[in-house]
Amino acid sequence: MCLSGIWGMGGIGKTTLAEIVFHRLSSKFEACCFLRNVKENLDNQMDKINYKELAKKAVDYARGVPLALITLGSSLLTCKSKEEWEDELNKLKQFPDENIQRVLRLSNDRLGKNDKEIFLDIACFHKGKHVEYVKKMLGIRGFYAETGIKSLIDASLISIDSAQEIIEMHDLIQEMGCTIVHEQCIEDPSKRNSTLSTSLDLPNSLRYLYWYGYPLESLPSNFSPENLVELHMPYSRVKQLWKEDKRLVNLEVINLHYSSDLTEVPNLSGSPKIGHINLHGCENLVEIPSYFQHLDKLTYHDLGRCTSCLISLPNSLRYLHWDRYPLKSLPSNFSPENLVELHMPYSRVKHLWKEDMRLVNLKVIKLQYSSDLIEVPNLSRSKKIGHIYLRGCESLVEIPSYFQHLDKLTYLDLGSCKSLISLTNICKVKSLKELILSRSNIMDYAQLRIMQVATASSKSREKEDDEHDDYHEYYSYWPSFSIECPGKEIPNWFSYQSEESSVNIELRQDWFRTGLLGFALAVVVSCELNCQLKRMPVKKKKKKKYAIMILKPVSQ
Image (cartoon, rainbow, N blue to C red; front, side, top):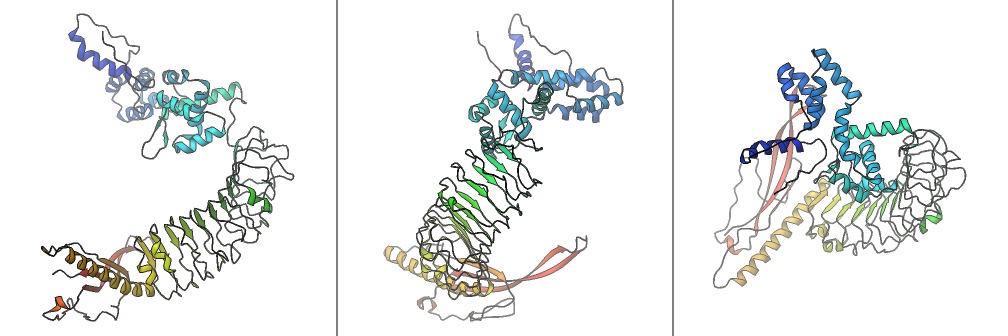
C-alpha cells in the first residue's frame, strides 16, 4: 500500500487537489470511495445567479482560498436578490463568517502557547515587516522568536518573501488573528498588552514604548521603566523624561529626536546595555554627561543640530552623526578606532583632530559644507574607506597624496571645493567609480586624466611589444574614458577646433614614429528636452548644452 500526504494550512486546497487526483486514478481500482466534508460549490451557484461583479467581490474576499470560497458560497446560496448579496458581503467584512474562521483556525489551534502569542502579534503588528525587525520586537516581548516563526511557517500561517525578507500573511489569516485578539479582550482586557501605549496609565511591564509627539514635559512619576528595552518618543514636548533618576537597566535604544524642549539627558549611567542614542534636533540640550564615555555598548550616537551642548564621546562608537557640529575639532580624549561611519555635514571643524588618529574601521566620512575645514583628516590607515563627501568645503586646498593608495575608495565628492589647487593626486586613484568636481576643476582634471591614461596606454604597449618579439599581436582593448559637464566652450588646450560639423587634423607621414598616443576629442552638443512648466500640460522645448571630452587610443 502506498500513502501520500498533502501538507499545508487549513483551507488552501488540499481536499480539492486530492479530489482531482482521485478522479484521475479511481478507474484503475475495483472499488473506490472519496470522503468529503463540503457539499456545496461556490462556482456552481455563481453560474446560476450570474452576478459577475458580486462574484468578483466574493472571490476577492476569499483571496483564492478554496475552502473559504466554498463556505462563502454556502452563505450566499440563500440570498435571493442582488441587494441581499451585497448586504451579506458587507456583513462579512465587519463580522467574519464563523464557518470560514472555523476552517482557518484549525492550524492555529495546534500551536503551542509561545507560537500562538507570536502569531497574534504578527497578525496585529508585524505583517509586511522585515523578519529581523520582527524577531527583535518579539524578543523584546519575551517570546522565543526563532522557533516560533519556524512553527508558523511550518503551519502555513505565515511565509517569508525570499527577496525582501519580509513576513507575509494571508488577509483571511490576519483577519482570524485580529478576531481572536478581539475575543480575548472582551473576556479579559489584561490578557493582551499592546506594545503601543496611548494613555498615561503605563504598565511597569512595558518593554517597548513608542509615543510620537508625547505632549507633556515628563513621563508619569508612577511609571517604573526597569523593563524598558526600547524608548521611542520623537517630536515630544519633554523637558526631562523623569523628575528623578530611574533604573534603566534593560534599556538598549533611546530615540528622542526633535524633542526640541529637552534640556537634560536622562541618567543612563546605570544602563550597561545602551547601544543606540538618537538626540538629533534636541536644540536646547545643554550637556552630554561625562559618563557617556564609559557606555561601552554604545555604538550609534546622533547629535545632529545639537549646537549648544558640551560633549563627551565613548570610544566604542561605530556610527557618529552630528550635523552642524559647533566646535573646531572633536574631543582629544575621543579615540575613533571603532568608527565605521562619521557624518558631520555643515560643521564648524577646521581639523577633525589636532593629531593623527587610527581610523582603521572607517568606511564613510561625510563632511560636506564644512566651510572652515582646511585639511582632510589623515585617512592613510583607513584601508576600508569607500565614500568621502567633501562638497562645499571651500577652505580645502589640497587632496593628500596617500589618496592614491586607498584601494576601496569608489566615491569622492569634491563639488564646490573652490580652493583646491591641484588634482594630481585624484588622478592616481584607480578604484574611483564616481567623482564629482566643480566645473573649473573638471577641466583641469580632464587634462590631467587624459595625459595619465595616455601614458599608461603607452607603457602597456611597450610591455606587450617586449613580450611578443617573434609575433606581434595588437590588442584591441585600450584604456579610454569620457567626461561630460555643462558648458558651451571647447577648452583652449585643444589644438584643432572648428565650429563646423568636422575638423581636419594634418598628420606627418611618419606619425607612428613620433610617439603619438591617441586622440583627445571634445565636442559641444545641444539637447532638446521636453519639460512641463508649472504643471501645465503644455510642453516646451528646452535646450541644454554639454561639453564632452573623450580619449581614444591610436590603432596602428
